[in-house]
Image (cartoon, rainbow, N blue to C red; front, side):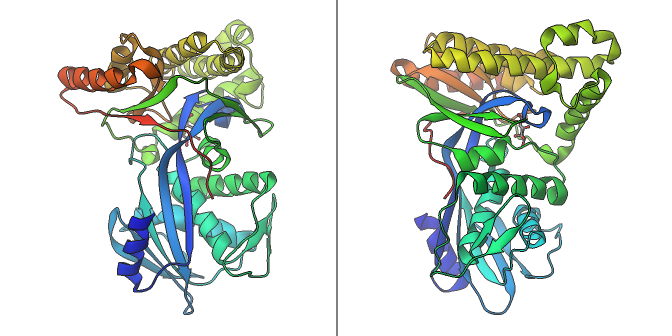
Length: 395
Ligand code: GLA
């Protein structure tokens, strides 16, 4: 936070008055289930987007980022895309959605800094959206309901605490910003994870009923992230294509979403689907089952069984959904052969990014060095391997 505060002073010549942080997330189990109204387990990770800000009086909004050159400036009532500053789209998309719901904001300065590795599949984009929404809420206090916002009297720069319901409204607003302004038709996993994180706990999301539960991860288990160094970009269109296959499969099966389909039903109705739709449906239906049984295994303290579901999930990504890549497969194989590894799989959208690994705490140092060394030997690429702490959600 100190770094971004200093950056703000350099950019804007005065100190910021509002500080906001939103964590990135790791998808633990349940891949591409969110937009299929399915089940997913995730956690908020100790990598953040920070935004510090201050109101200004001339009606202009000025954004600066430590990660990109140049500042992005525009009047509060004319928010357009600028192809020279695509990073600002995530902020602008949120501003547009806030305005549509009746949030009356005017000008402000904001400096953005992030520690979430870009392209690692830890959802820096959702964290940026959430941090943007919370920044505006602190600068121009409002209460957001499902459909619209009510402006609140300004009380210093303190907006009231956000209750559970408002968190969900904020998550949905940010998701809409991403699909309408940025053009990625994502589900709610990333935004919910950044907002509902709880230290040392896993988040269990039911994406049909939008209910959230938390469950602790057993003591003695470390969460380790291995970055493949292969960048992924969801905006590239692969993500939207996978989503279309899932939706097409649901239509052919006569259901609203693949959440409603059991593995037996899918097998019985296989001939209704084309091959690719069937493969995608198999992945999603299987993932829902794995989360269901995974939650139960965790509750019973059966971390070994839980880890097996992670391996199976990765195999399903690799063979059915085809959203893995050779580097991610290699990382999972290397991890799997380490005696302290409990489970490993790709995390997030796929096509590069990182793997998430559950590792016995006692062997975690050796796991880190040996995975990094063997990955480099096999691929010539460096992998950043780090232990991740599970943290509270955005504030
Ligand atoms: C990305 C999307 C999420 C989710 C995951 C895959 O992170 O933004 O909504 O679909 O991929 O589970």
